[in-house]
Amino acid sequence: MTAGTRLPDYPEDCRRKEAHAPLVEGQEKLSILKREREALDRQNARTDRCAGFYDGLKVGFE
Image (tube, rainbow, N blue to C red; front, top):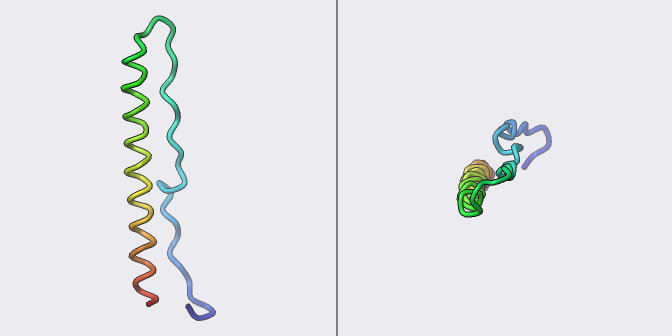
C-alpha cells in the first residue's frame, strides 16, 4: 500500500454486535437456546461478510 491510499469505509454492519436472546421468565429453555443459536448464526454470517469485504480489498493491493 502506498502513502495516500484511501481505504473504503468499514461497513457499518461489521461493527454491530449481536445481543443475547432475552431471558423471559417461564419460557422453556429450549426456546431460549433456539433464539441464542439464531443470534449466533446471524453473528457468524456477519463475520463472514466482513471478512469477505477485507479479503476482497486486500486482493486489490497485491
